[in-house]
Length: 211
Length: 211
DNA sequence: CTCGAATCTTTACGGCGTAAAGATAGGAGC
DNA sequence: GCTCCTATCTTTACGCCGTAAAGATTCGAG
Image 1 (tube, each protein chain N blue to C red):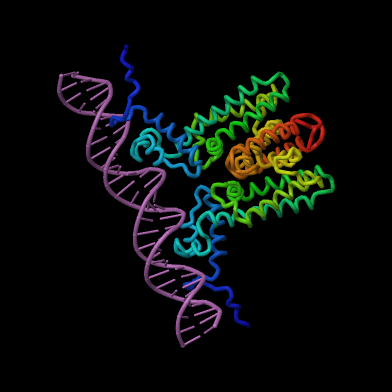
Image 2 (cartoon, each protein chain N blue to C red):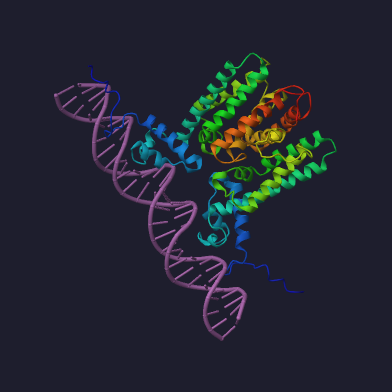
């Protein structure tokens, strides 16, 4: 038997060894349990087994830590959108519907993380990682909706209307679901989403339907 | 000259006289200046010229005060939706568009208040005033979209799809605008909304358009 | 006019984020 | 192998926060 590689420290020397990663893990737990409103850096440090001031060396402040979480969340979302599109058929409408379901699915699976992603007051959107991850998610949607059309001059360009319509629809639906439009427990939310969301998306996507 | 009616106390006796109203006013100011994240009951009391514990007799806790603000906000929103519909023409599509513009207009005019309205973690949705005001706003929209159709069995009923689609679309658009999709300053937001929102709404509302 | 009840102040407690200063350990250079 | 610099972590402390508890003041019903 070879000795186990000691790169994985079992427990707590004075120097933690991989505190940065441990803080991110703990922060995700705290966030999931208590929501954005109840998040606390001290509690996160407590769970990582270190003092309240220890995070300072890895994250300048709470905002920096939350920004790292949000960047990861945008990456997860981007992956879900990309793979949902890939797994759908060739029809554009089907692909768009699949992405929409994936978007709302992510929101329901990770409600606190989804909340965080849009709390500009708590995040540092000057952070490159965050910006890149967010753009990747946005591009996944835009590429599909405006299929091959030349990139618009700005994000207020009228050519962006279809993308903004799709994004707004699924984003609004997700937010309303999370904010209690279908009740507060996870079960009834999911039931309502399954029952309504496909029809809602088709109202926008299928030509000639309209509301 | 008659003496001024002394129902309006000029300044501070030990008993404030109308602290409840003063607190609501001050709270609206604090909320508008600092946003939901930066709101503080102590600061609100300070501005009302009263000690940190004084609000206790009028609002059990911060949540109760914010709940009162949110109820007022939902009432304002309902009024805007109702009058926007009334001022629009007879065509259903025009009326729906007018309501959508009014919805997003309210969000941009009162960003902090609009934020608050959806922060279930900070509000008491057991409060009757809040529930009623919210329902009034929702009904304004639903009555218009499902024009005269019988009320659905539940809010997950498939018949609710058109209402949820309209609501989701404008709600999502408003949220994305407030959360930085078109920049962070008020001006560029409003420009983007004017340029995009009518087209976005028509994509859903006008038959045969689709995205 | 009196006295209970409503309103407001004072004081206090524990939690938060984080700044500043001290303790400890890892590792580069000799 | 030893020294010492530096990164990492702890301790302590400060000023916020919400709000509980107890005391002061005023109002108004009887």
